[in-house]
Image (cartoon, rainbow, N blue to C red; front, side):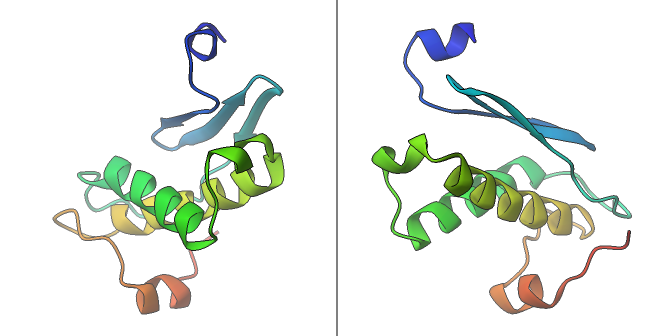
Length: 107
């Protein structure tokens, strides 16, 4: 809450295997991450950010769209998948678009 008071519209808070929190002035959404066989966590945070931004920009979204919880949650869910898949691979190797599309995390 205090961080939002100084300027950002949204805070995305990751916590390893814990839920990702999407914090806005409208509240906090907690999104679960899939359980994966972790090989290497190096690069997972960067992969999360890249997955979010690639989704956000790829859908033609900008700052004005940050007011939509539906848009935020969809982009964060995709970012979670990118980071999760990256964690199953050695040496901070994010998936290609084809690998991402084909990946189904174990439940």
